[in-house]
Length: 173
Image (cartoon, rainbow, N blue to C red; front, side, top):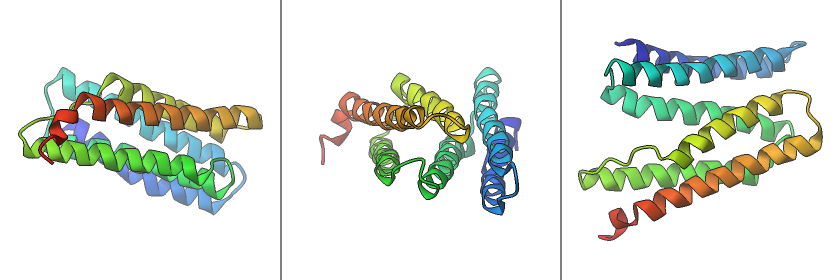
């Protein structure tokens, strides 16, 4: 297993660690969980750069890397719903977008096409990660609400963009 795949696997393994820390609830647990979240997020940044630079792109990485991202982000957002920092409708937007884009990619793959991550998807991911980090900090409620809206709107925009740019993949349906 190459280094990028090991980093992806590490990110997946850090997700239960992240959740256990949050549920353990010891003093400072949210900061410890935030540290784990940031560490896991950095493995995403690092594994992608290494894989592209050294041409270490694998089928495992293509599958597991985006899955690990979705799992990490969903875990954090579900925690925020549980503690009242994020409404469930915002998480639903994120989950529905991910299922829809994954479905679009599967349809395109059946046609021999690959739908690469678009610019707006990368902006969405970066904005979501930054907002999640902020939401773990003691920020004013108005900033927390702004983060929820940034996540929801960048998610919606990028999802719509994927479908607009790749509508022809659905033309046979």
